[in-house]
Length: 111
Image 1 (cartoon, helix red, strand yellow):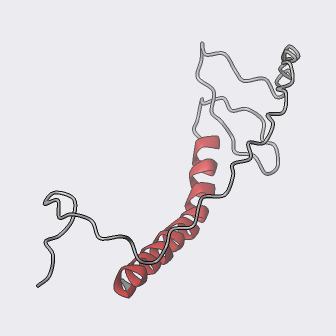
Image 2: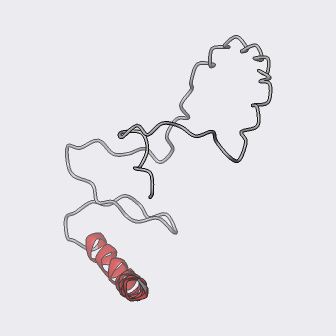
């Protein structure tokens, strides 16, 4: 069991190392996309990636309208259900009376 958790920990460390090492490559790729000759780009916003535009495709507006949802319908309240009180069960004595041997209900009697 401990061996599996060690392997999982190592895999998580390797994935984290790959992700952190690729952050710099993403900046390089973004720079290459911005400097492709004849390729129009959307002006950059600090902290946001640049998205190259494709001629003939609609561009995403910088601010999207806020969606408006209709108010939720009001549902009737559920009446509280009265608690059901059950009388206490009778106590079962420790020694049960002798019962006849029934093969499919009890083990055979010991001799």
